[in-house]
Length: 299
Ligand code: GUN
Image 1 (cartoon, rainbow, N blue to C red):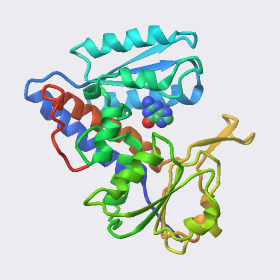
Image 2 (image 1 turned 90 degrees about the vertical axis):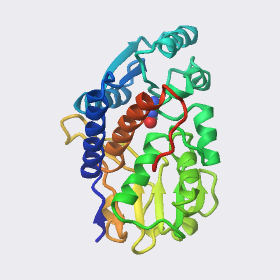
Image 3 (image 1 turned 135 degrees about the vertical axis):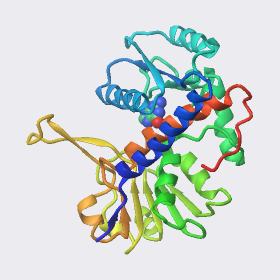
Image 4 (image 1 turned 180 degrees about the vertical axis):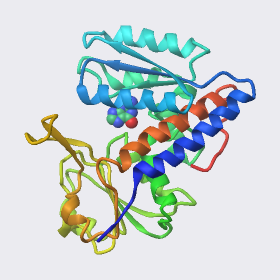
């Protein structure tokens, strides 16, 4: 039976550290860090994530505002809004919740955010810095996964990490991070076109599932004792549940937890870490924006 990696508890630790650092920052005479969140349309999952982020911000002393726009907002209008936030010296971090409606090109929007306010780490400058191993904003979910591993005492050096998924938000940046000096994993990246996926996942010391398909990783795909990190948050219908749906990961938790050495639950695994690391990025944005030197920090 696998040991549970308690993302809720570890995220609470990270949030407490951020809260203490925000308090010290404010005590030193600075204003509270300020996060602007843009939400377009009424995707219920997106609205729920945004609420989670702004509530968590308030709890650590970060000021936040949610700019909620109708789904018909044009790309030009959204770009104008970002320009306004870029120029507003009282705004430290700008986050555009994804996905955007189909008529808006997400790249054009993400490229418009000033890199020093890009707390999601999705701007090409930050993505490039990450690829080069330079300090910059690291996307919150991959950074959160590394914190889970580190704070659980899981060794990464020399281990074979298999990342399933190649999204710009999780799979790709995570693969790059795992390769970094100091982390030193050997990395395989798999995706929807990978041949014989199970043969690769079975070789993983650390298996990361970031596919977006409910219970895609089954027990036969996992090596005995492996560390299994489940990034998926999938809504599946459940008439027995008051909401009519329930959240499941990309991993078949029931079966895989019998075989793995360590495993993250859904909910309560990676999800809370994403929020905690976003808060940390926002604090860093406030502290570093004045110089835009991206003080090197341990991740
Ligand atoms: N949609 C899914 N994950 C994320 C994320 O980390 N940031 C933003 N902005 N949108 C998302």
